[in-house]
Amino acid sequence: MYERKFYGGSFYDKIKVGKPEEYDLDLVLNLPVIIDPVVEASDKPGFVNVRIRQLHRLSKGKEARKFEKIATLMDGCRYLSTTKVLQWVERIINLSLNKLGKEGNEKYYVDVHLDHNQNTRIYVNVSKAHPAFTLKLRNSDETINLDIDLVPCFQFTEDKWPQRGYRKNPFPKVRTHFLVVPKNPRRMEHCENIGRYWRLSFQEQERELISGQELKATKPAIKLLKKLRDKQNHIKIASYYIKTIFLWRVEVEDPELWQQSLSCVFMKMLKCYSDVLQSRNIPYYWNRDNNLIGHLKEPTLKDISNTVKNIISDVETHLDDPFVIAKYLINQDQLDSLKCEITLGSRVKRKLKYSQILFGPSGDFGCISEDERIKRLILDKEFLQEVSEHYEKYLQPKYRHIV
Image (cartoon, rainbow, N blue to C red; front, side, top):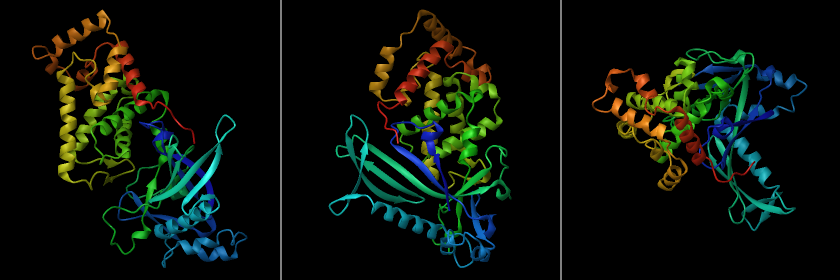
């Protein structure tokens, strides 16, 4: 059944912030065509059921032995079961661990050749956070510290693309597959058939949607917004929610927006972020009936929303401070270093002074459009680019390990 690996998640999408210590690795499985699997839209938008219609054909096929495990992964009505698939994968992982070296009764390890003709002993532990099985890799002094999320999933071709409320495949010629992941909906723990729900995953299509030279500011802006979220400790806002906001805006915005300076794009998207928090709704890009933040409590969303509104207000109030955004993205030591490294030229200072006069309380700031207001937050594009590059510098880790 094993088909391929898919490198998913923020790191491989190039929107990761912080140290690259966490990686997502999807283990892509296939169901044989002969058993006629069908993907059915469920009563929960964003989730589907997978039903096997012709299991009996497998016993007559040439590859029956190869797929003999399939029958054990279904429930009594021949629906593919998330519970049984996860149990099966867990058994496989445990069998694999037992083939590694072992120190004492608990520590599994593998010796890896890294550099200087020396082997490094990497200790391996596994934790469960369904749908992922996390491989925790550490060396003795923990200078190597990696988490790799292994996620089993099944792939299907476009002819089985979900209907009933789902948008069509935007890349039918180049991204012809989609995935289903053994993740159950929230607040359904006591549902009798909870094991039938599979979460849809269109990672390959989403990667295409936010890539390309014409969208050059998109990924850096996503990273900045995620960095702001982390700095404000908004742990309830998943990275995927932020990515989804961008997916919607890429669809409706003029392409020229993404060619503008990073600061301009960031402020535009910060306002979009504020708007969806206020409305308490981030629609799932592939089916808008699924509100990604619908499970969050109203006081939590209100608190996050107020924080973001205050940040926007502070930026707009302090137009003469080119570092006003930076303090919400990096810590004080990094901010001090940033200020030391950037020297404001006289031309930039004049423009900033002009900005303060023009858009201050006595200026005409209130008479211009919202888009123009954002564009003029910092007037000098060259200086803006320089600041943006330094922001990026302080978002990058000081070291990285390659898997």
